[in-house]
Image (cartoon, rainbow, N blue to C red):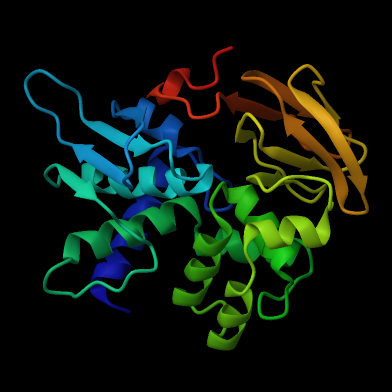
Length: 282
């Protein structure tokens, strides 16, 4: 294994350990940034992310675009946090997780991309999620990859690429999975009547402790779960779960006798601009 990749994976595991997190549970990168003294702002700029190094007057700051989908912002935030973790200077990143970087010019980008992927999606955790569902990654359906990407709070294609570079799936399987988009998975597996929007899919096998959504996003839950109806409106029932739409900002909970713990659902305003810690205030 390339020493750069090895060091990034090792550093991500070390950070998880220092945060009191194991390699099997999801983490929320916004919360990690806040606990680390890094300010995160969501802005209305067409870009990926910006890291601004601390100076005598300002905290280290990450800027994220509200024009990007919610899970893409998560990875971008982890990428920018990687610049902070490694003590890099201020960065303006039009980064793309699938982009091929030259070793000579982009060592820092390769480092923080690998760090971000390993921090958000530890390989042992990803493999555990497939195993819990008695699934083999190389034959699992796209909806299963989407389910696991929802658990870790990342994008579907981000998880697919992460599995490819870590040799969990073959090249042919990667190509097959790439033919699907979240919109296609949503339409094929859940309902024809819903509009194209970001969605999170949760089953009874394992649940994240926190689910971040934006108003108009969907949350697909097992039929026996009990959500707070003042924030989530029931849209449809399907064989794979009940579809709810996030209808107003705020913090809610979903409970079920089959869940180990309740899920805290944090809903932010659509096209929110401001500090990330305030994004789901009513």
